[in-house]
Image (cartoon, rainbow, N blue to C red):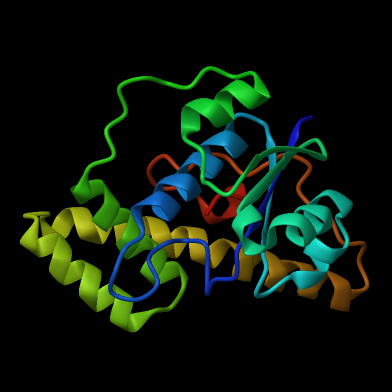
Length: 199
């Protein structure tokens, strides 16, 4: 399995939707990494502000920072080797690196961007972000039903870790051996049963 590691510069989060201004490059890159994960690539992402030890403990990254400073970030490693630094590469380049074909004709519109931002605001518990992006979505003519669907999806994604950690805690405290799912969670398509392991 190929492993792609992204070493981000110091920032509050990698979603690109913190605060009132959306960073389209970060939003697009986060979506591209999710797509890459769905192709079977192991994706790991580190934030300099939150995980400095990951940077210091990786010789390639530490060397790049020593030579180029923050300009080296974001730095991307593929199976431990640097393939990019100082930019968030497009999906087509990510696909080329890992040997998969990127779909063509995908349009990342401002409407889709706001729906993604609404979902990210729900996932990050950011009230001001949610209020801002709901207002922005309405300005773009996005119906409330579409925003409600984005909220439902975000809530399902957000609730999965809480449900799984509660299950694990119950197993550990009951004395029974803890079991972890051996297969990755399925991609969300419509409603999922709570017992299915999907959000």
